[in-house]
Image 1 (tube, rainbow, N blue to C red):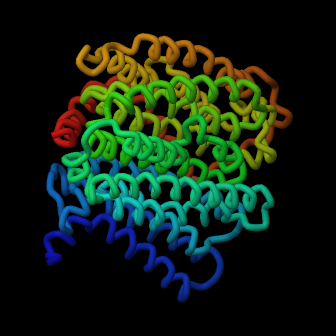
Image 2 (image 1 turned 180 degrees about the horizontal axis):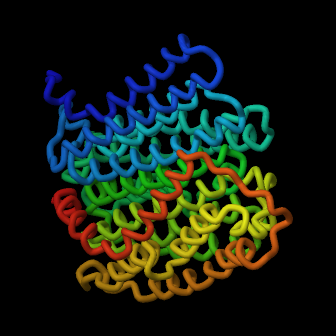
Length: 483
């Protein structure tokens, strides 16, 4: 029997769903024109209320709905991360909506529903719930990628994203079916208790799960959709995909592989270590040749997924805690970069790096936000990006002999790749600060968008010095996950 107490534990998700419906209903009664800006404020309010409710549930460690949903601190931390990312994207969407003179309710409704799907995804305690939440979020994201439906790039990006998303979901479902055939269970804990040994069928299921989740987090060789989708999608949605969707993919990957497939750890640790090395290297090498800022950041995000996989390959409490902190710091860093790019229609309508010439003189806040974000992505101190890489590399070095020993070779590849990435990040910064601007016309930034940029910079600057505090707060959640 479903109890009211169980339903109350899903209050954050329910608030987002109700907010989405309220936005659509208000759209029917609000007059056309600027008054429809209220739709944005309703979406922001729903996100804020959901965040307060999620924070109020901390700490938790229980299962509901007959074990299909897990409400624990690990999942709640990711839910808060999604809500922060959604709020920042909504703030930047005001500029996007003003530019298109379109304040459609469906845009905000789909953003809220997609976030709700991601929040259920990270709380899934068995594969059927996981798959349904994954499809809800993926369909909402595909809709948002194609928002500028008269733009051929957006249409192409949405088609690629939808088709490859369906393909990856099918592969994932085949892996789940194999595990069900081996154990007769879909619950993660039940599968862990019944799965015995690295049989050929178990290894095939493992490979299919890696492929299915690999698409969601955009790791090599499942990253082929990323550059085209990031370039074609509306920039606020690109920011959302690069942060919230990727973080959700890592969260559910950690839960599934540590809980359900712990008996195959020796196999998947090496798989993720190799994928981390390939993803870092290919992402950075391809980024070197890019002249389009959105494609450059797309390949950069692929490389960042490789760095995060180093912590997954460590397969320890320290490594998983480092991955969670990595994703937290990456959220503010990547959003800072993409939200600065949202404004580029006034100086780089074709998204070329050359269009950023002299941006410092025309829009100091935009240039500073983008520069700080790029330096953080490159891993330079004292920014958050330095510390998130430091912790995942340190976790890989500190692996105990019982779990395979230190991954010195992987850390070395990560350090070299970080150095390589500084070249293409420096190209953009040089263009903004050292190349003369083609015009003296200043770039105007709405107050809501400026607030989003300022919050991203604040997160980048504070998460570095406070990294130890956040790691200490994350550690108990990881310990509870692995019990």
